[in-house]
Length: 107
Image (tube, rainbow, N blue to C red; front, side, top):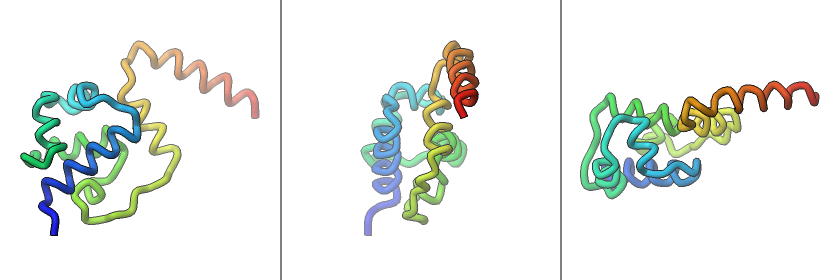
């Protein structure tokens, strides 16, 4: 059976790459160092509950998924979009908002 830190690290790394987020950006969003995140992704160390919650939120997945309790990854497109939006710099929010407004007019 795999160590919980290995499962956690693999799933964080996999989701981060799936969302196209750099390690540095995810670390910044979660308020940890990129070196610490590298150690987490490598299964060398675990994380605090607060950091687990922040990672879960930033990656738009459940803590159960990250911990290997639930193997089902939601294919919810809205969750994927929210995850991608959560890592944007706030300076892009007006552009994204305007784009969404224009796209909704095309219905």
